[in-house]
Length: 203
Image (cartoon, rainbow, N blue to C red; front, side, top):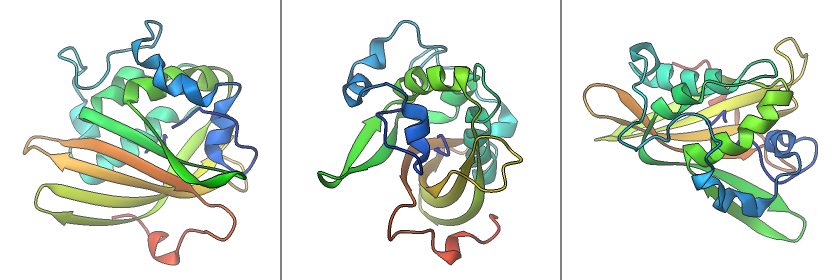
């Protein structure tokens, strides 16, 4: 997340950006060809065989956001990608904001399946922990928007995070449970830090 958790493993960006740590040697172009990767674990959200969500993971806004952070966090090893897929609505996307020295910011969208296929290799070899450090939410009709401030660490006990930023969660409730529709995020970078209003204790 999301988003956060997590795109959680992409083209190398350098220290100071959390997804750089997940990139390894994976190229930007790979994002657009992994959707049919038969080696990816679990079932993509939106398919008829998508796994059911644990009720505790989707009973509230806080529950589904915290589940998104929890499922991508842990020591080096496999993640529960079926749990990850179960949090998302059909057609959901994770959208990373990319920057480099050659031009303006641009976007890198992916499905939950694409995210898992790429991030899974990094997580299998590296510890990664991300948690929410504040939130501001608004709802209009069926649309809920939550700005979830996050910090990313290599180990839970690290004194300082190696990255911070904001995951923008778009959420939907069908009367039975909460779904993640989109996780759209940006890291802190030169001249841009998380405003204090997003660092209050999450509801």
